[in-house]
Structures are given as C-alpha cells and as structure tokens.
Image (cartoon, helix red, strand yellow):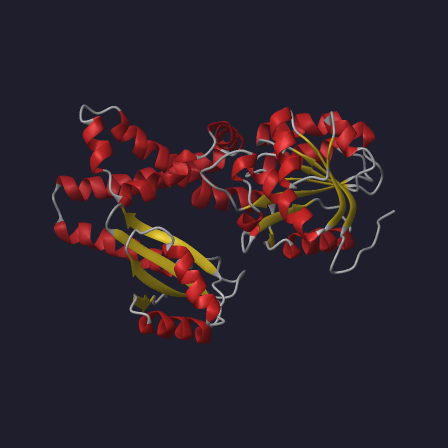
Length: 377
C-alpha cells in the first residue's frame, strides 16, 4: 500500500541508494540535507566510496549488499552506470515489496524502460530518471547537492505507475531543487543524443585531434580559454560515457551523421574558399546559440543575465556574491566565462527577475565593476 506524505516531506519511508558516486552522492546529499526521506540506506561496490558517502551525510547508514539496502525500501535509486542498471535490478528484485518505486539515473531511457517492464512484477513500479546535472569531477568527492539546483530532471514513468506515486516522486525531486520534465523514452534519447551525448563525443574528438601532434607541448602552452571551454566535458568519467555511447548508439549515430554534414559544409567553404559562405555559416551558428537560454526555456523561468569583467584574483566570486547578498539580491545562476590566467575574464550572473538584474547592475557599477546586461533572443 502506498504511503501518503505531505508536500513538505518526508516523501518516502526508506530509500535505498545503490551507487554513491557523483550522481548518487549528489541525490543522497540533497535528500538527506532536506530530510525528504525518513531513512536513506546506501550500498556501493566500492567500500571506500560508501564510507565517504556516509561521512559526508549522503546516506544515513551502510548496507553490505544491494539486496540488504533495498529490503523494505519504498524507494530504490539505482545510481549506477547505464549498462549496470539491469544487473543491479536482478540483485534486488527478490526483496522488493509491493508498491515500491524503483528509479534510475541513466542518461538513456529507451532500452532500460523496455527491459525493466519485462522484469518487474506488476506491483513494483519504475520511473526512469535522468538528472541533467554533473561535473568533470567524478565519484563521491565531486558530489554536491547544489548540482541539482535548477537542474533539469527528465522522468519517463512506466505505463502502470499510479499518478499519486509519480506526483510524490516529482515532489521530492522538486523539493531537492530540480526541475522535472516528463518525456517519452525514445524522444528523450533522441534529444539528449544531440544536446548531451554528441557534445561529449565532439569534445573528446577535438582533444584527440591535437593530442598526438608533433607540437603537443606547445599546444598545451598555447591552449586558450576557447579550447578549454570546448573540451571541458571530455573530463567526464570514461566508464560512464562508454555505457552511454553503447546504450544510445543509434540515436548518437544519427546525431553524428548530422554533425559530419555540418563539418563537411564548412570544409567545402574553406576549400573553395568562399568567405561569404563562411561568414553566413558562422552567423547562423551565432544566431542559434544566442537563442539558447542559459537554462531550459519553458521549464524554468527566464534568466536575466549580467556579465561582469573581473581580474583573476583570489575570492573574486565570493566578493561579488557578498556584495549582492548584502544588497538583498539573490543570484539564481552563476558561470565563469573564458577566465585567462593572470589576466582575468568574465562572470555571468543570472537573475529570475528584471528588477533584481537591474538592481545588481546598479550595485556593481557603483562599486566600479565593468558590468553589462546580456540580450538574448
């Protein structure tokens, strides 16, 4: 029988967190810090990661096996690499009680949803989950509940999941700071292949294109902010991204085909050469990139942005935050842009209201900062 809960929580009686790495640890921290579940029991195949998760407060207690963690749990979070999800489900399925909800955090959903529906009994429910959050850091050391703040969290519920259970799970995630969106699994996979998986592959390819050249050391020395920004996501966990590539390979191959056509177009313009076509190619890319909001339009409120030019000095971000905080202005998003060692760069600050943006701009200018608003289409 499903246990009801208030909109403030706790939303579940016992959560089993299986996998206490970057994403699992982040979810655990968010749940435990806000006490959204009465008890969180964790398991990880790496005992040191499990111990660190407990020390950091991402779980309340440790289990010696996945089955032990899942016993009597009304929520099970499988925070393991995509290709390990079904294997882990096999380890716990015998101890799951009727009415329990199982979810995953994998970056692909179609194949998982199809397989899970064949495995689970009719009274055990599954909601596919994909938190669009992460970091170049890996493991529990990189976990931070702040990663879920305003992050898109895609949900792909199974057909038999009760609406009440979907609402309860969604409510817990939103209390943890995430912004949920419900998608068809195949639509999800097609979209993330283009906007998440393809960028990682192209970042890795860009690194590979310069990694073996004769002037490799000079390349490292000359690498500017553009190269580092474009390749930052290539620092992601190779094991995790290997599984993502394999599990979503057909959608990713389709995205790669379109990317290849785009590369061939600019290659043709360079070969001719056709300066007008090159400029048009770059202009079209610039216009579309400008139309992409800092956060997902239609899911989050529009973000109004201010760019602040700063020198690269210790504590500069803290000084900005303190200055605006003392003026009663909340920063809803922050991003470092093109910071150049010993010279500086720029900080992007985001605000949910125009009033806060304008007030922040005035405060910063009064303190002598070079700040300007960002116009977005």
